[in-house]
Length: 114
Image 1 (tube, one colour):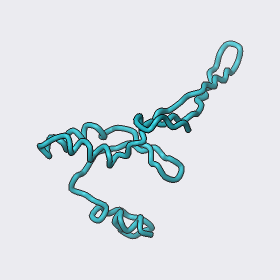
Image 2 (cartoon, one colour):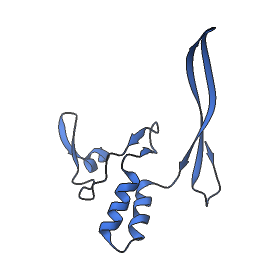
Image 3 (cartoon, helix red, strand yellow):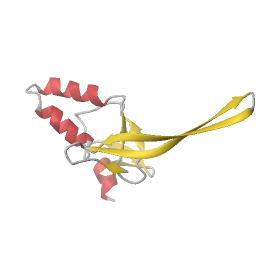
């Protein structure tokens, strides 16, 4: 991972992409070096910034939904999994959002407390 100067808020993650193709001469393996460029700004920081830029909360919420819905984000913990944002719900928070975990309904806050 390459981190740029402080003012840029970007990291470059090196990796590779491999593909196999069938040709007249047999199978061909193509391996290329690639980089993913990631912002170091968290989703929460971006949401707060966007909410602060508009005097109308409804307009700001619509801008946030447009910015994140359908986009790919990378979780900055564990194995850096990639998630696709299906939508943004401003009526939920970690204390009210519930889901089933280990056959029991828990809130997001309870899940991360354990």
